[in-house]
Image (cartoon, rainbow, N blue to C red; front, side, top):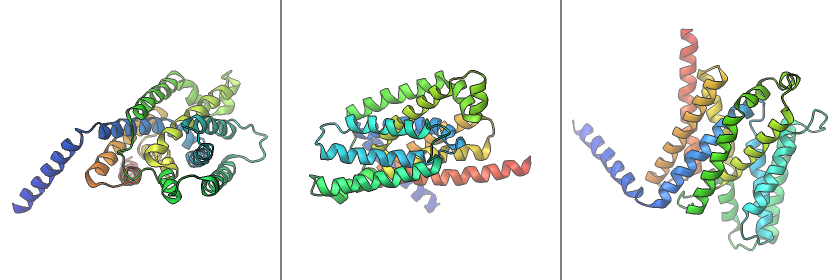
Length: 293
């Protein structure tokens, strides 16, 4: 009985604490941005995982890190003016490279990832004006130690860009499905696969740049990989996997941010850990479902 009372008191205390924190706009900003970014990453993640481009998030996030370093060296007032076009350019090069490309797939992503990370850190070390280079690098790679850094402008940018991404995905859903499963057949039926691969590349780059503020460069791949793989443990149809992945990602992001607020843990790392735990649950569910069938 005493244990139940203590548990109820602890839960009530956490709830009151959460309500108190939500009185601050910056906490609401973090939740809105986190949920929207996770939703968009999950939608794209299904296609990227099926096309064996799971680690493109890792590669492009490191490109974005290198672009941030360049923007810092050039003293650009808004780093987004440099980061967004550079990341989009490299996304197009990776996803739209033809069959005759000499360096393909995972090799190209790995080379790009390591190269951009090395160049970015070197530029920040040699030309950076900040006295806390290690702190700046840690923030860029792993996300801010606190989620209470987003401004109203950041949130509005995130809302607009996320709305565009979702609209594009829904509008071209059938074409994306065809390109994902059999690009050769899609091309034979008259679908302009190059155009839709270009759209996927641009949208992927946009989401990765937006996600850097939330989880950092090294953790972005988790937002792309875990929801898709978790949904695939239980479901088989493309539509069911996409829907489950979207719900999975939103719930994990919301839970991770709420835990981060309550226990003052790093938002990005907390979201990733929640994704890992949920992946374990879905793996068990998939095993049980397979045994029943």
